[in-house]
View 1 (cartoon, helix red, strand yellow):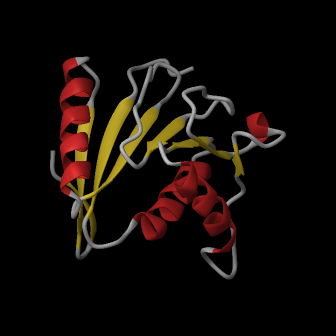
View 2 (cartoon, one colour):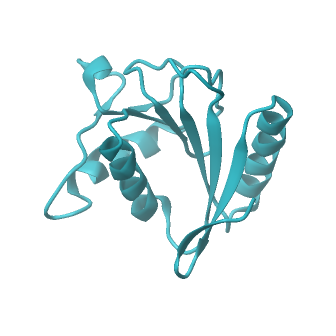
View 3 (cartoon, helix red, strand yellow):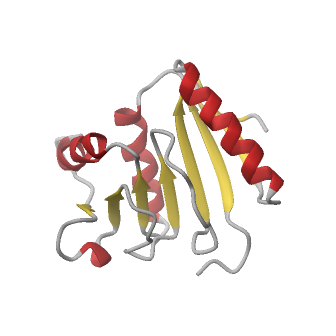
Length: 152
């Protein structure tokens, strides 16, 4: 359970797609000793990520599982379309316009959105406004040539 308000970080993907960005962010999350919950509205995306996270790099993989599988609560990275924090994650990753739901259980929420998709931009803007109006600390990270740069 987070003791302070959940930080919400918006990641504007412009130079790389989700498949390239998500594994690095998940690795950073796990290196902090945190668990991660990746929430999508699209079951097909979750099934794709389930295979991708095992094979995205030849020399390593990210331990993970789908929420519907046995031992979901023990997974360091859990992929889900549901609203429950089954693995007691510290970090919530929202992709494909997934809704955040209550954020009290999380230390950080990362909203990843495709900057080349107008619908994704509109959804991210609406989420930014809604979360900011709740008094949550929000920041905006833009993908630049030299890496991520905090813009707001």
